[in-house]
Amino acid sequence: MPATPQTIFVGVIGVGGVGKAFLGQLHHLSQRLSQANPPTDLRLILARRSNKQLFSESWQPLNISNVLRDLDQVTQPLLPLQETVDYLATAPGKVILVDNTSDPTLANSYPSLVRKGISVVTPNKKAFSDTYALWSDIFSGAANGTGSANNGYIFHESTVGAGLPVLSTLKELVETGDEVTKIEGVFSGTMSFLFNSFMPVSGSGGKFSAEVTKAKALGFTEPDPRDDLNGLDVARKLTILARLAGLAVESPTAFPVESLIPQALESCTSGDEFLQRLPEFDGQMEDLKASAAKEGKVVRFVGSIDVPAQKVKVGLEKFDASHPIAALKGSDNIINFYTKRYGSNPLIVQGAGAGAEVTAMGVTGDLLKVIRLLQ
Ligand SMILES: NC(=O)c1ccc[n+]([C@@H]2O[C@H](COP(=O)([O-])OP(=O)(O)OC[C@H]3O[C@@H](n4cnc5c(N)ncnc54)[C@H](OP(=O)(O)O)[C@@H]3O)[C@@H](O)[C@H]2O)c1
Ligand SMILES: *[C@@H]1O[C@H](CO)[C@@H](O)[C@H](O)[C@H]1NC(C)=O
Ligand SMILES: *[C@@H]1O[C@H](CO)[C@@H](O)[C@H](O)[C@H]1NC(C)=O
Ligand SMILES: *[C@@H]1O[C@H](CO)[C@@H](O)[C@H](O)[C@H]1NC(C)=O
Image 1 (tube, rainbow, N blue to C red):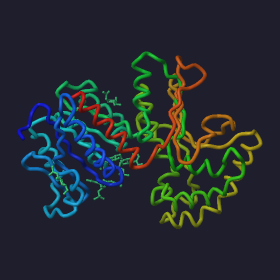
Image 2 (cartoon, rainbow, N blue to C red):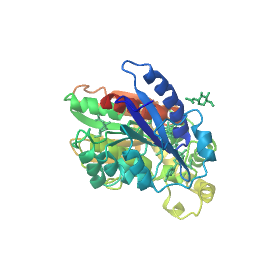
Image 3 (cartoon, protein in one colour):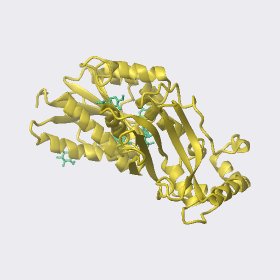
Image 4 (cartoon, rainbow, N blue to C red):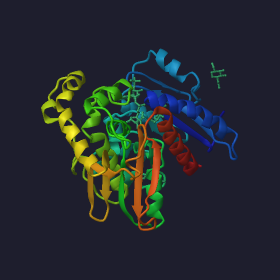
């Protein structure tokens, strides 16, 4: 099969939870597109993980059904990233790279990737929430930024709210001339779960340390729960949203971010030691719960952007029991967009904000958008 103008080459880096789910969806998508009008020949030509990679030297497609097994059995040494990028850039057609890692090195190469004509689709927050200089470098090169039309496109819907349409909703509000005044919400599945069970609207709820231990046992936290409790993940997501709302936020540490790690436990050498000592601080959290309850409110860990005042912050806030943020369930995310058009009742996006399948859906949805732009 010679490469035709309708051939699009796809490389995937990272085959973890999201990567695997994505490959399943890619398989389905490539079959559907091969029968579409006009048909598109979507070819997987590269799969790479931290220590191995498999690529097609002939530009013929790798078999998506077997690629994980084949990647596992590969014996060639891993090529340096730069050589892999050069290989992709010589493909006889348009190339889309799916970055399914949380690797900052790869994120730093996005500006050069798009300038080589390679489009990037990714759930990796690193590139978009690092310095403002990196953000500007990416979007001054991207074809959907201010770069040349021959450069690559960049899509990152799943960096905020996984598969939920958060960034696309904000983009549409802004592009249709609405004025976004405030964005407020729960942006972390872990924080959502913790506070929905620590202080449910119905009353009661467990001790804070017990809820953290439970969340970890259920696999809702990072291996070291401090990586969730320090608020940085939420701060990265707020940085991305604020920039898309037009604020030149310098970095995720350039605005107030409340950490839930007691200062005395910052130096614990392991996540387990941290969990063991966390009960010493339950008293403080119980006081907070009691003071909110006295006002008929609940406590939630939220991020907010006040657009006209150019203020971003992340931390604990109290909400009336009737507020949509208070009534959130399980580990769901909720994002409230307050705009001129919507008045005092915000446009609300709500649902699962983590999980491999829904995140992969955000990635696959972006892939489809780029494919349409490249056709
Ligand atoms: N899971 C979610 O709910 C969710 C939601 C939103 C966003 N995200 C984002 O999606 C991305 C992937 O998440 P995940 O849950 O799929 O993570 P994961 O299960 O840890 O998988 C990460 C994958 O990246 C590979 N990798 C890491 N460093 C690499 C490098 N330097 N070069 C090549 N490959 C590398 C790993 O290789 P090995 O297989 O060899 O270890 C693994 O295949 C992350 O950026 C995450 O923040 C995830
Ligand atoms: C890429 O990441 C998305 C979102 O994390 C995930 O759903 C998908 O399975 C990943 N794809 C690959 C091939 O790793
Ligand atoms: C891919 O592998 C599967 C399972 O081994 C096989 O049934 C299928 O025919 C292969 N597809 C192609 C295009 O070779
Ligand atoms: C292009 O860039 C923006 C970021 O400015 C991103 O959110 C969007 O999904 C990308 N695609 C298009 C067509 O704008």
